[in-house]
Image (cartoon, rainbow over all chains, first blue to last red; front, top):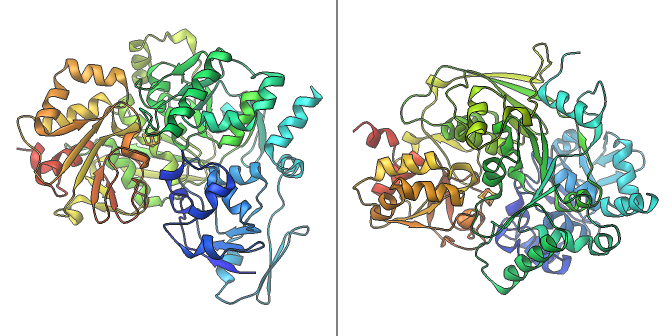
Length: 160
Length: 422
Ligand code: SF4
C-alpha cells in the first residue's frame, strides 16, 4: 500500500482537469487523467488500497463528480485530510467513497510512516501514534450503507 | 432562540422549530439548477425517470451555457439529450444556447427570490445570496436524486458575519473587496459556513452583490448573502417581480456567529489574485508590469452590464495593446442587447475586443479562448486554478473589470486608477 502525500487546496482542476469534463464521465475515461496536472505519476502507479493524505480544503473548486468516481475506481481506500471543500465531501458520501477529516493525523504523518485505519472504531494509526476520527451522522451512514445516494433514493422510491 | 439567516431558513424548510449548526436536516428546495451537466445527471437515473417520472416540472431550471455553441459531436449530443428530456418532461424553466450563463439567468428571470431556497449542481449556485436567497452547490448524483424525490439533506452551517463600514474609493470595486477578503481569510477560511454581509451595503448594487456572493465558494462557503433591502426591492420591481411574491428572511439581532469580521471599505484598494489559487491575492502595485497575452471580461462573476460599461469607459476611443487579445463575454443575452443599445459593444469592438456568445466560454477551458503554454491571462472570472483555462502551463490572474480593461491597453497588469483619474 502506498501513501500519496499532497498539500493544501488540491482543487477539482488538479484532481481532474476541467477540459475533460464534458468528454469523460465513466470511470475508464476518467482514470488516466486523475491528478494529471499535479502528479502525472499518480494514475500510472496508483494501486487498490492506496491512501491519499492531504492538507486543508481538499477538493475545492467546481461541483465535479469525476474526481470522486475516479479515485474510487482506482481503488483509493480513503483520503485523510485536514479539511475538505463541502461539495467534494458531499460527493464522496453520495458515491460511497470514505473520507476522513483528521488534522492531527495529517500533521503527525511523515514520509515512510506506516498508516493503518480501523474504520469500525474510527481509529487511525500513524507510525506509533493513534488518532480518533468522529463518527458520521446516522442519515449519512444510511446513505453509505445503501451503497451511495442513488441506491438510497431507489430504495426510498420503491417504498412509496 | 435568536437565529442566523441560515438557521432560520433551514428551520423553515425542514419544518423544525429549533435547529443547531452541525445538524443534518431534510429540505425541499424551490428550484434545482442544472446546466450542460443535465445530460450526465439524467443518464444516471434513466430507468427511474421512466418508472416514476420526475418529481415536478417546476423544480428544475436547466440552462445550456457551459460549452455553447457545441464544440464537438459529443457536446452537441449532450445538448440534444437535454432538449429531448426537457420536451418529454415539460420542464418549465429551460434556457437554450445563447440565453446566457445559468446563474445570471436565475437572478435575471426572477427565479431566485428573497427567502427562497435553491440548490444547483454547479459550485457558483451560491450567487443567489445577492438577492437574499439561500443557495448552494451540490453534486450531480444529488441533483439526480433531487429530480426524482424533490428533497435532499443539508448540514446546518455555522455562520460568519462580515461587517462593512465606509465606502469604496474610485477605481475600487466589489471584486477587489471579495478578493481582498478571500486573500485575508484564505480559500478555506469559510469552509462549510454561511457568510452574511452586514453594515454599510446600501451602495452595493445587485451587480456588486452578485460578484461577491458568487465568490463565496472561493473561500469555501456554503452560501454567502446580502439581506433584503431597498436595493433588492428596487431590482426585483425592475424585473417585474412584485413584493407580494416573496417573504424575505432576516437574521435575528441576537444570532450567534462562529466568527465576526470587520472591513473598512475605504481601506480596500485594487487587487489581483495571482496563480494558482484565488487566495494568492496581491495589491495591483505588486504585480504591475507583468506581461499578459489575453484579457477576459465576463463570466458569471463580472459579465454584467455595469461591468461592460466600466470597461467601455476605460477603452473608449482607445486601442488595446497589439500583443494582447481581449475577450468579452456578456453574462446573458439581455445584457448583450442592452450593451448593444447603449453603444458599449461598439466601443469594445473598436478598441479591439472579440465578443463571445453569452455563456461560460473560456472560463472553464473546455473551448474558446484556451491558453497556450507560457501565456498569461488576466480575467474577471472567479477561478485561477492551474489548467482552468485549458492549459496547465499557462497562468491566470483575477481582477476587476476596470483593472482588466486598463491592463488591456498596455498589455501588462495596470492599476486602473492610472487611467480612471486621467
Ligand atoms: S462562467 Fe465560469 S464560473 Fe460561471 S458558471 Fe460558467 S464556468 Fe462556472
